[in-house]
Amino acid sequence: MQIQQLQEIIDHAKNMVFFGGAGVSTESGIPDFRSVDGLYAQKYHDIMPEEIISHHYFLQHTKEFYTFYRDKMIFLEAEPNAAHRKLAEWEQKGILSAVITQNIDGLHQKAGSQNVLELHGSIHRNYCQKCGKFFPVEKILESENIPECDCGGVIKPDVVLYEEGLDQNIIRKSVEAIQQADVLIIGGTSLNVYPAAGFIHYFRGKHLIIINRDKTPADDSAELCLHEKIGEVFSALH
Image (cartoon, rainbow, N blue to C red; front, side):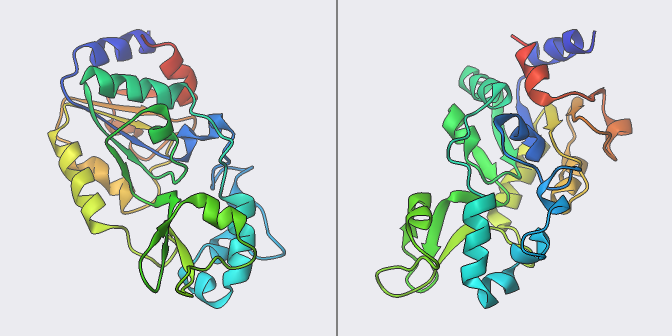
């Protein structure tokens, strides 16, 4: 019944926006952060991941940061799942205007999505802190220890580390997209991390849908709430 209701909403949608988190990519084999089996439940040489992927740790222990980053944050073998593919299909049909993601894996683009707003950056973009030159992720993987530019500068992933602010231009575009949407689908996110979790308050449209395995603080505000894997839900839609 819920799938049928969701299908009817999508069939009549004029401007959908999707806002997703780690749960969108877990079905592609990429671990999330906050679940029982997630990255934050682990330790890496007795250091918590939150510490390692912080701005100060990157500056003070760059070599150790990159050892962890290569091992735990880059999954180039991962392929888009049913959720990524369905979103790209809706965009091609002209009913989905934007994907707003907290993920850094680039799977939405790999599936064919064009308008992807990456709140936390991407592993596929890396830049020299000295001259600004950009490098693909292969540069990080192929280098030993600390990746460096030809100019001698240290290369940094274009991802938002702890203690760093989000890109204000991406936030502005995300808020504008949500404000203009008549359907907002939130999927694979706990809605516990701010400022992203606050985006929901900008929605003025007709249909708010939440698809997440666990309950979220916004469940009571949603017209439709499905506590299931998002890939399985999207697979049932046409």
